[in-house]
Image (cartoon, rainbow, N blue to C red; front, side, top):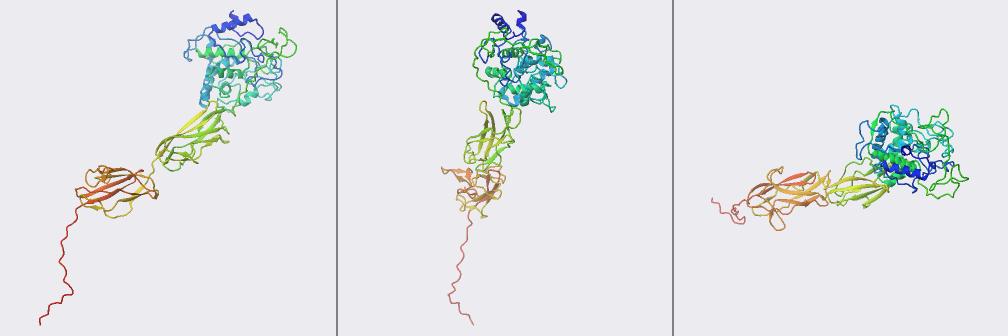
Length: 585
């Protein structure tokens, strides 16, 4: 029984009773119940078993549905749920992950979290796939840069028990100029690597045999099509896109659950090697290397209930030919060059403008694809929210702009409203899981950098009387009339306005009561302001009125209260018509 627990049973090679025992072992090891895409319990995908794959169809799988290792985790998990992943190098060897391999998985998780945070890629999923595909790069046999040595190659996909995939890379990655082979720790076929390959270690090369490059490529591939890997259905779809086999999903799910319960780092090159491949695989040609372990010669698997039967006569040990069962097509992952990855600020500066004025700065965003390159033709919707009355040019609150060839989209200019305050501009792109950026913006009150009286006439009033002449000022901004500028008028004791005055001239409020500060004054369209009437109390003297604008400009006006001077009547001048007295001789 222990032997059955330690490995996945080969497809079609066991009875229903033995298959049931294996499923029971899975439950005992606390492996999760995998959500199977086709609903068949215990039956593998026929393509993974070599059935009907000679046509070359691989359903877009990253590995070309090549063989994988079927060893299951030990029954005893490395630690209790919720334990730290930084456990000491002790315990079951199966729980240990070689240092460079573990570092590559965690680096890939961090990188994807910055470009596609809504995917929520867990490094433990990469570890599970890496375990099943190559036994963690053959137990961590990698050099100082993380490159597998010797390189890891799967069997030739020549249609002999596997899919038929003719050479797509001229042997550049797999050393085979006739057929393709799965390459590297994450077992990408060359055509998939051409679309999804990454340079994660910064050496200028996209190398499928480098664990850092391969782990990041796998992470981005799993996140394709806007998947959220925190959702069971999306995670299952992602795993099945890697190898379209329910047995493969079941095995990966088991290791994923196992690693989630805890693992530890072990030295490179000391990991355990898996032993059981999922399907028989032919011996590779001399000089091309081999897969993670030796494999027997190809042997067709029989048709199974729920699987896709092979056409033609029955296979040895099989149940004969049956009518094909229709299977809905599985969408292929969108290449990373066309997959929406992230939405970023494209250098938008502070958004500030004076009421009624146009903003100098425009909101601009940058869309990137799954590998971080600019992504064109992405619709971005910009929306203004707030109570300042600010709108985009043309009087719109919402506009949609598509990104250009450089991945940027720039909203139309903003026209500030008349009310000072803060508002936001929100940019949204994407449909399945939209990415959102929010920009804070401010409308400031209209300002003036200068204010002055429009005349120099002295302002004088008698005690208890009102000033006969009104005070008129003009505010300007950059030498132009400043319309709509708020002005505060205050009676003060000093020219700096530090101390308010509670005596002397005053204004009247709506109830006719004396007030010495007015805050509701605004310049007209010409920037001018005529103050309300000013009254004098019974205290004589020279008083100061300070006018201050929004923006800090000010002017001080002198107000004089004094009694009128008394004048003495002059004697009337002689009448010029009178005849002068006669002059004595």
